[in-house]
Length: 173
Image (cartoon, rainbow, N blue to C red; front, side, top):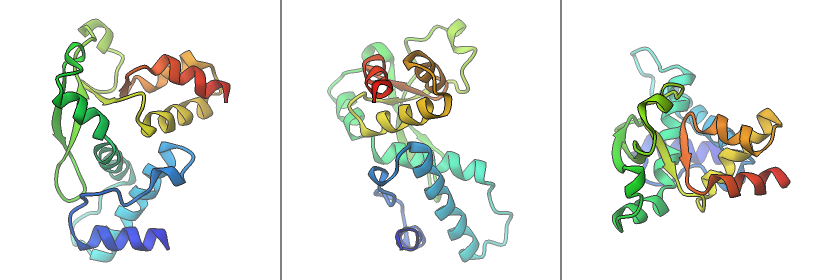
């Protein structure tokens, strides 16, 4: 029922608000998978004549949408002038029907440190944002390691403020 409702909202217009409630899912990856599946179904039902996008591409788009929808804390902090040391900014990234805005972090990492990362920039997520806990939970559950391992895996795509304290809390749970 939830997927049907989400698909109808995607078909009807712009994706301006969260169509997938992340609180219902144990981890961030599950919410991304559900939204990507909805997007795949919408492309199928719209009967796109062109080649449909792969699930890898749709998962990236779903990640962009979920992060964009849940970055209220980060946007207000950016508007207040916080995150100066992180060189944070708002950029447009690929969305399902149009580009979406996300807050990214480009600073605090010298070029030598950036070599091992997957992207030139990282999504910026506040440690108080519920997405941060979901993402850390996924990384901890996949690796079954400690806080340091969960943080290391996560830092390839996301920069979470106050991540050490949050990771220790999640590992204890």
